[in-house]
Image (cartoon, rainbow, N blue to C red; front, top):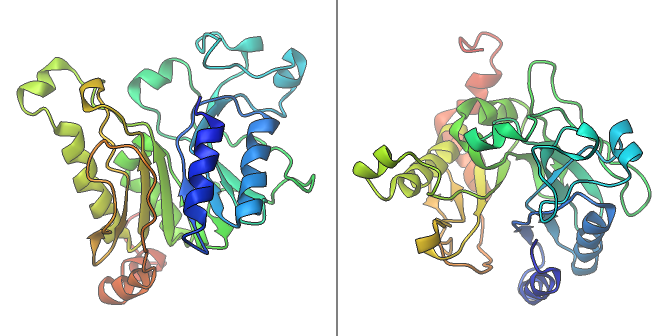
Length: 292
């Protein structure tokens, strides 16, 4: 679990430098009302938009969760046998600068080891917001696991970590109007078979560098990727960055596994100019488009 007070201090310090900040943090912990409320209160106090990483949780509004009375905790419980047998989901939320929880996303494409204890996709019920209301999350299209959240930053889609490997997830969001896709991640280089290292010690870094910029160009959208940083010898890759069509990686993005918080300038106009140049969205929206 991240140290809340250290993180809050970093948020406060950086918020003074920008009038409109989108903060993507990586945390691990239970999806408790207290956790979410802290982020809602911080977002409202500092007038910033927050995507606070992902949280492994049961559906806090499900019958099983209410019966057991608590949500499994990663620092205490065995996730392979969750309390009450309730399925576990990996969930990311978007909190606006007014403190409202505008929507959430449940991870669809699980990394291989995660499949032993996590359940993919089924949208969980959002917890109540600061005002006591549940956010009006738009239901995903019947053929898609993905929906777009209407935010102060424009139409935003959220994906998580290994979702990055699937272009279909991005196209599903682009078809629904997403201009920015946010990807909180905990991507290390320690889960690969030993055979991989015979070819390269930097396979995962190469994967991330190539894929993030490609997704920005091929979808004419902004990509905000936030990955865990830490000692390279422990498998951390980092490379948190913003990637834009036309430009590639935005200056100021992380270049390695270093930890910290940075503010970068994002020219969202590149999305429109890139679309004018490439027409990707127009082709996707065409009823006669030959890919389904």
